[in-house]
Length: 89
Image (cartoon, rainbow, N blue to C red; front, side, top):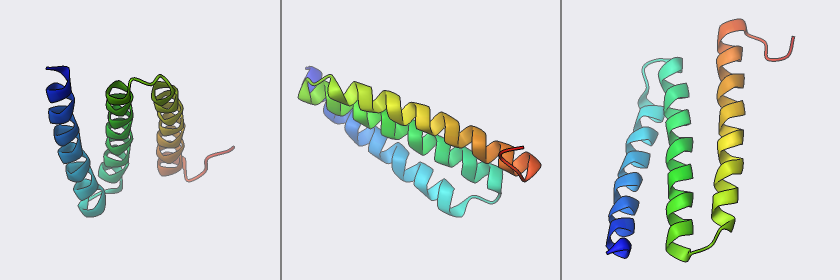
């Protein structure tokens, strides 16, 4: 039962990744592309967690935490650059 749910989740998150990638490539505005990039990161985290559940390994959860931290810092840096044109003052 859990294996079936994980497989369905893999397919759905893969579809979400594809849609986010489409928005990243075809976004009409820079802000839409930043949101799409953040969404891609969140979907990648979800895939890592699902893979960790599937493999019954805790290492993937730690990797997902690192990816989440890097994604947060990257999003803040991109938004700050977009607003001010400078990251470090």
